[in-house]
Structures are given as C-alpha cells and as structure tokens.
Amino acid sequence: MAGLKRRSLLGTWAASTVPTGALGQPAGEPAEPTPAERGAMADLARAYLDKYEVPALSIAIGHSGRLVYREALGWADRERREAATPDNLFRIASVTKPITSVAIFSLIEEGRLQLGDRVFGPGAVLGTDYGRPPYHPHVDQITVEQLLTHTAGGWDNTADDPDVQPPAVEPCSADRTDPSRAAARPCARPGLPYSNFGYCLLGRVIE
Image 1 (cartoon, rainbow, N blue to C red):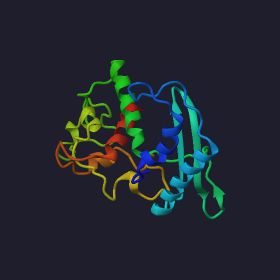
Image 2: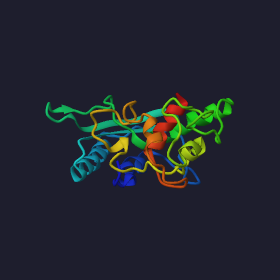
Image 3: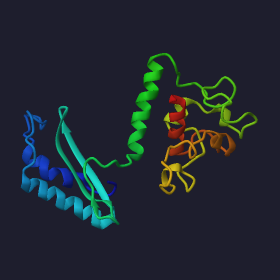
Image 4: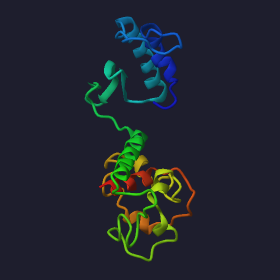
C-alpha cells in the first residue's frame, strides 16, 4: 500500500476503539470496529484504489494475538467481476525479507551457518552447483552477511529484477532466481545496492 498515509486509514478505527493508558499505550482489549468505522475505513481504502488504479487490497489488524479487523476491497478478477475477499492470496514482496532474515539467523543459532560463509564457489554454501569458476570478479567472495545487508554488489532492482518482471512466473521461482544467473552476471563490487535478487539467493541458501 505504498503512497497511502496509513495513519489516516487506521486512525479512523484506532482513535475511537483503542483506549489509551497513562503513557499513550493501548490499554486492555480493543473493541472491534463498528459498522460506521468499517465504512469510513473502506471509503479511505477505495480512494486509494481509485487514485493508484490498484485492482484490490487486503487489510488485517491484530492486537495481542487476536485478529480484530479483516477486510478486502476491489476485484480478485476484474473480467469475471469476482470481488476480492480476505482469503485471496496477495504477493507480499519485501515483507518476505524479514522472514528470510529470521530463517537465516535461526540456522546461525543452530550452528549450521555463519554470517561470514561464502555463497558461491568450492567450499561455499552453494558450492559449484550453479556454475564453476572462473566467475566474474567478486562473485566468489560474496558472503551471507553481504546478501542480508544488501552490500554484495550488483543485481540491483532494474528491469532484470525478478520481482518486477511480468507475473506469468512467481517472483522467486526457480527459473527466475537460478543462482547460476548470479555467477554469470558481473557483480560491480561489494557495497552496492538494494537487491531483491540477493534475498532470493538467500532463499537458496536456506534450502
């Protein structure tokens, strides 16, 4: 929901339904939004859909382990006029990055991986499964930590980025993120730039 002032969307509900304690912290269990509040939130969401020509969106609000609001607006299938529901699946894009990071650090805590482990080449995590030396400069020096911190170099979010290619194939599926693409493409130098592809490679490290 990039571009939307989320405070305005959530504030309609939160300001009137979440009681606050002495320090402005939520106190007790929030009530579920009233029909009027749900309507006001839906109006804000529809305005976002119209402004940015988004086909559909899904919203969920949880509090203390309990789901207190769940709604979907727009069309799951425009041609068939099939309305979106909260059960429709949406791509979550970069929300997968913290999930990936948690999985990596779980492996580190188990002693099965280290931040300084190299990713490509003999003796590395992926070894030579996706291409043998010689690689482009720097490729065989890339570490797990550099992929986590977007400092591996190369593979920026350009037209070749798997996340922005047409949706005929899922963004991080095998044919889009075959690590051999990494070994075959120049890697500018460590320290450059934010990379969706780098996190797809971390998925292969986890596998």
